[in-house]
Length: 330
Image (cartoon, rainbow, N blue to C red; front, side):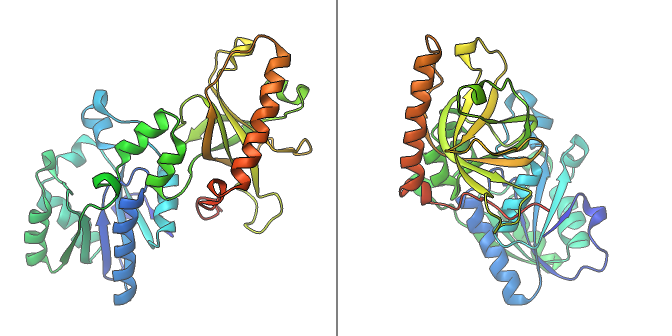
């Protein structure tokens, strides 16, 4: 998959393409339906498939107080778009100047001049151009005079439609299994393993702590059954995907302040993951974060959590999706 950060990076020699447009935050099942149609049409015509998306979220620029929390980083989004079968992603920086383009200017600059669109595939509610004045009807009218076809994909999904807003609500409540039903995969966060307080190792449960920039929306505080994916290893490497008990919170038993994401690989005390790029994929929430009255009840609960994780990850729920929720990052 090719990632172009701006129209200037699109090769001038690129031929015709099938294009889609959207924010694609979360790349949920509704997005995947659109992307799948783009990929199929492009393959049938023997041309390139391209997804056009934006960063940051338009509301973060135009109305920061109304901006939603992003479900994914740009890299995660591009990865999942590629997993849906798309050849190239055009990531456009969203600025006030960009937002001031008329629908006609946007179509001419991006779809016609840069991408040579033969077909544009969009959802029924697509809006574009200054003040979202461009609609599907606008796109059809412009396509008729500029030589591209428009294919409209209707809303699909359970309870009316799948939506990024619904996924955010579910993750904020810790309902990661329901979020996965919207996404068609386990929700995941990516980061680099750093040193923590090493309390887990002293208690017999060494954890891999994420530090620095964490990519992806962090679910509600609590303890989760999930998977640890070692992003730097080959897909068929031993120990690439490991079952884990994942904790999110401030460690209130130890009067912690900083919110942390850390995980214990079930039954393993021999792993040295410091400095590794890893992914935590969330399968099911076991319980909220609790404050325990001393070490002994905490350790007893940790043993119970590990046992519960084993049951979940060994059962049908843990096998619903591949723990490795996207192609390997090179």
